[in-house]
Amino acid sequence: MDLPVGPPVPPKEAVSPSRTPLPGRSVSLVPLTPDHAPALWRHLGGDANRWRWTYMLGAGFPTYPSCEEAIATWSASRDPLFYAVVVSGEALGLMSYMSVVPAHRRIEIGSVILGERLQRSRAATEAFYLLLRRAFEDLGYLRVEWKANALNEPSLAAARRLGFAFEGVFRKHMVVKGRQRDTAYFSITDAEWPAVKGGLEAWLADGNFDEHGKQKRGLRECREAFKQGP
Image (cartoon, rainbow, N blue to C red):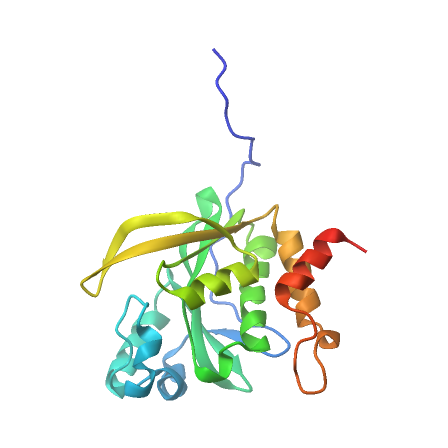
């Protein structure tokens, strides 16, 4: 008896990401090293930034020694593979590849925490573009995931803005810092990537910003225009 099965996939694995810098125009993603600790402490550490860690798995950097210790540990990790988000030579935030499964050709962008100068910035959007482009075009992944605490509205909104499709909520998925976490799942597939890429590149183009750096078209508008064609 013939039963329905999924379409065949070419018999190859994706490539695990390596500690390779990803340079962009307004931002660079640089493999995390202990040397990034002083800048990351300034932008992510202490009581003033404690709120930024509310939905993260870790508690943040309450003291500079705790920041040094965490950055040293994360610098040696391969999964998650951490990058410092660097603008004008200064590390302003963190992003990573994680949950890397080359055999099934899926990978996640996660452990994202951005300092104030990266919030709602062109540089932050470009950083996500660099990670997505490398995952799909250089490393051979078929699926890039985004997972977030279902209460983390800014993360949910960011996923949708970037072009990730909402897939559902894993209820009571984790216990984080002694509290229940429901986890929202999003993804972009290789079939969706061309439209997502086209929208990102149109939004990031110099012509999409006025002399004050204000966008002319939003990212969703750019993506929909790309889908519709010339």
